[in-house]
Image 1 (cartoon, rainbow, N blue to C red):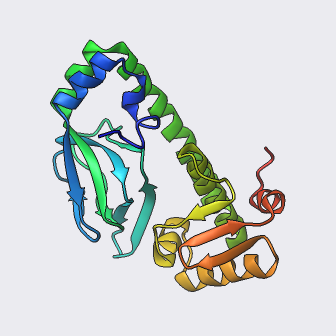
Image 2 (cartoon, one colour; image 1 turned 135 degrees about the vertical axis):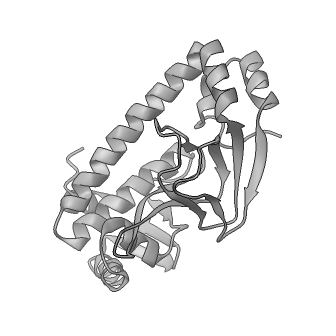
Image 3 (tube, helix red, strand yellow; image 1 turned 90 degrees about the horizontal axis):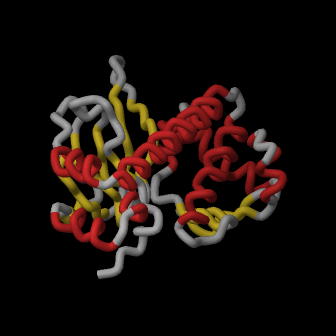
Length: 225
């Protein structure tokens, strides 16, 4: 079966024979909505490429609050870590499917195929850039800035998947967005309403955002590109 996210996945760097070697050690794993793919503190035995659905990376703070460090969307690689254990709970927020490879097999493939090693290094650099951008967004004081930046980052993902930069799908709920941005769910909902009233976005569906004024949204987010 043709993989719809292969052009985004780490295997896009491989030649056909190398892809065949990777597929020989890859298993497809379904993760039902609400299920946990991995728990924080468990040994990290596998790496994953998400092909369908969406996951969230969750850490429970000492006071019991939930922090969502990020979301895993189709084409994303889960396994760029120097830790031997999972640092987050990995939970499905939609019915999902992932390609699973053991850490041992991936280590062996990386040594055999330099293209794969370079692709993973590229992913690591991109993940670091994304983490820095997200940290800067979280440091902002105003909720509209945070939400605008979040929507623009999701829009960029939509483009990489071949979609429109002006139509964003939200597989996560308002509560998940709040726990990711360090806001309350009520503040997130009010901010979406405010952006809609200002004509920056439309909300044709709870999980769909249409960007009506991309320039103004970028200005609000402090994006100078």
